[in-house]
Length: 75
Image (cartoon, rainbow, N blue to C red; front, side, top):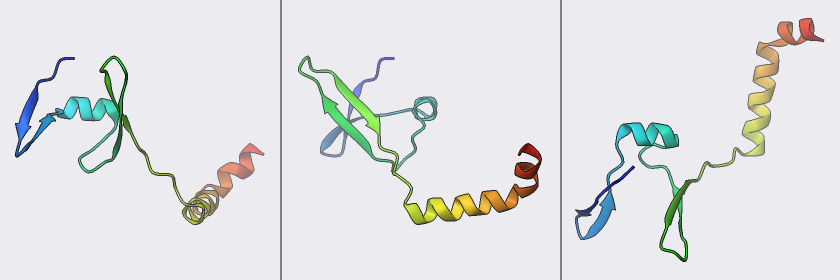
């Protein structure tokens, strides 16, 4: 895929269309890690925030409670 660097205010930028954003599973406001390799390649890697332990535990308890009958049948 080829993109053109465009002027955005006093900076430069690359416009990502909706299809590219969907493929990368990113949205406006998401953070990305930018890596510049020795040959000049620029790699953008989405940063997906880790879930905090309390939220994970709460979500797990809710899902276990919601699916208790299913888990019982599977055991």
